Length: 329
Ligand code: PEP
Ligand code: MN
Image 1 (cartoon, protein in one colour):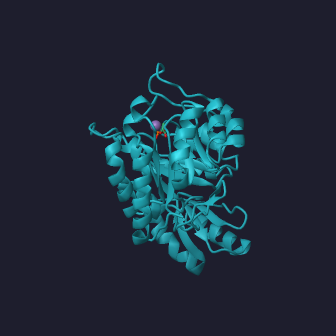
Image 2 (image 1 turned 135 degrees about the horizontal axis):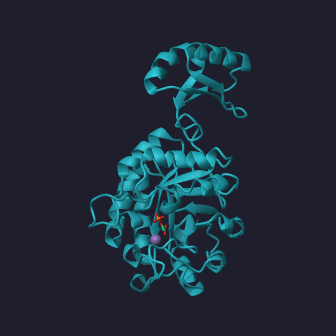
Image 3 (image 1 turned 30 degrees about the vertical axis):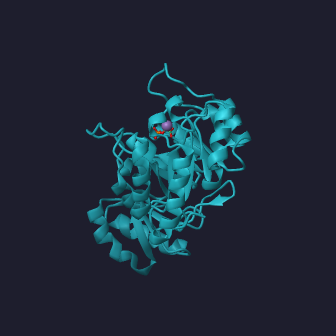
């Protein structure tokens, strides 16, 4: 457990509390980092109830999530000239995979006025090794050249790809399959690029937030969470969109939370309703797959909106957002 103390609490006061807690037979140590004042205590939630009163008015809160806990200020993460703010509803759209220079140009041309970030996969983690695996670094190049000035986001699948991402991408996506690749997460903690961390296929909220801690505790505080549906017994939809998890992580953490309705449901005709539901439960934005020719897409065509439908959805979200304390800037 990490106990967060008021900014400016002195070393003497911290040491006094550590001595007191140790005297009660709990492990306790100074876990301050820079201006952030923390004491790490090994105890249960129930034990904390007894310990808390000793801290008096220097106590701010406690959590197992040292870096992403709710008592930190909402992180105004900056990426490619855009800032994630609590009042912003962020729109991310683009194809599942970059298939060719023409394809990404055509999609970006038709949606660039309605997106804050263009998405597109170049290193694709496909279930079958016989399916399209992405255009690799070349795909990132096509995307950067044809994004109409919109910042870009793409998925990394191995740390040796990092140099390509450092040069060409504004937000690095960690996909559901890699959410528990702790070596990758730790190394992404050493970059400055913001990371969009998708929830694992069958990960709990606790595992998801601890995955964020792997990145943040290694030095990169710029983490954005993305709920993309979890695997349940239901197979009519591709996954089950867990909107309650969005409400939970908004309460437990200080991180922006994006909803990806495309991978959650797997069906293009559900995307509009799920996007509006995401706004209604307090998500900070959506990430939607968009394709000019969904029937011919090399991946995830059935869950991709055509540009005209996507643009209509964003127009509606612009009108709805202020009713939920948000705006699409
Ligand atoms: C994707 O965004 O294209 C993707 C592969 O997503 P996920 O990791 O959520 O399956
Ligand atoms: Mn996809």
